[in-house]
Length: 146
Image 1 (tube, rainbow, N blue to C red):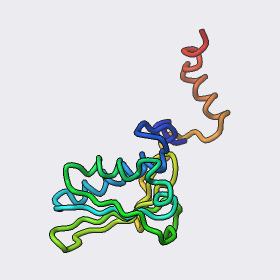
Image 2: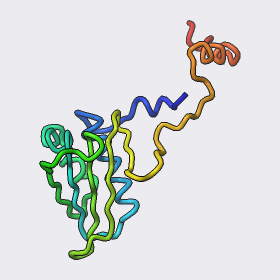
Image 3: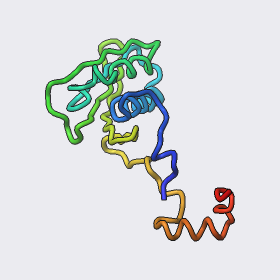
């Protein structure tokens, strides 16, 4: 079973796929390329078509601030996932790094070509009966029955 933190993420709205996911992607990208002079975000698919209304551009720019960041709403179809974005880091005119992210729902992200670190199984229980049995054995259910 996954952590409840995987199911309910806190962050800016109005859409976790269009704001929380892109915000998390921008943070990951900044960690990998912290010394770039400027950044460019290319939005594809749904992120491009509804990104203005869902503040995708705004959250990316705010996350990358105080560094300059240009957001480009691409008209080409999404690459693999409908919520695709490519972030690029520049020193002068040279691109020093580029990553493509997929905002896969609920604020979760995947980096193209990398194993997902999202949604790790942290509890051994997968069925409701197993969870209830564990609660009973640990006396947890008594805490909720007043």
